[in-house]
Amino acid sequence: MELGGISSAAYADYIKDQSTTAGSQLKEAISGTDYSQASDDELLEACKQFESYFLEQVFKEMQKTVDCFKSDEDSDPNDNLVDYFQDSSIQKLAATSTEMQGLGLAQMLYEQMKRNYNIET
Image (tube, rainbow, N blue to C red; front, side, top):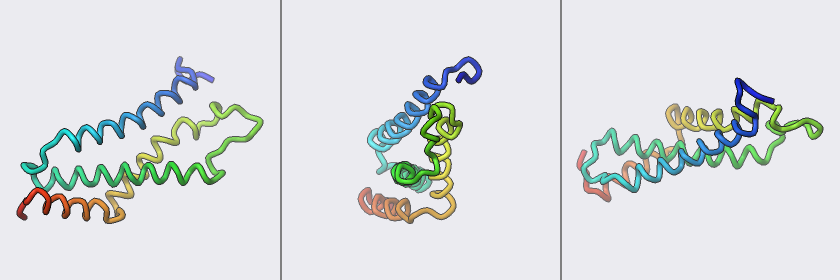
């Protein structure tokens, strides 16, 4: 099946690459930044990004254990539109979960980083 000239296999590979890229970008942002000079907002945003990425990975592993996203055994899994948008949906769910309520992980990281970098409030 093709969507606007893009084959379903190519699109599935693109989505997987985007997921891997998000993790790489987060790692580079965290390791490549000196947070001793960061503002409170920058520090909290980095912590929220980490929590969101963590939740995304948890949701992806949880999704593997249930049948709600699996396609019928007789059909080609690339024909199922859920396959195309599954990763982006999980990313949005993780980001929304972090912004709306979160696990509190971002706040704990934020407070620990402030102590580690001796940042005063």
